[in-house]
Length: 180
Image (cartoon, rainbow, N blue to C red):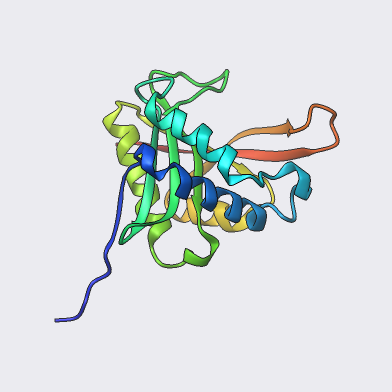
């Protein structure tokens, strides 16, 4: 009998806030380096951990969920699900995967697939029938990952002004999938 990996996905606990924050800082610095200036990216994991801890202890809505992908007890990725907030979305039937982040060193090990499936399962358990996600327009790897998993563009796009001055913007496209 061959050994099996100790991997899983579960709902995040407040004790996961530090690990999520450190992973976010590390991953975003690599994933968004070609898209955003360094000063627009988070750098202080301690501050971010406090925000995560507060949202994990008392979510704004019962359908706001944070999931973590684990290898043993180490957080390798996280996802955030909620009711969709887009003006053209129906928050009763449309759920949103607002974050799907993996540690770049953990890509290709199945953590992303497990995390994506758990996020969709969570949205289905919350009675959503369609899932939405916004993807940076130039992030071909994430778009390919999602389309291979059955997601497709729905024609919506947006440009986010990250600093309020119009100098730091990011273009995104929206993908969707039906939840059965």
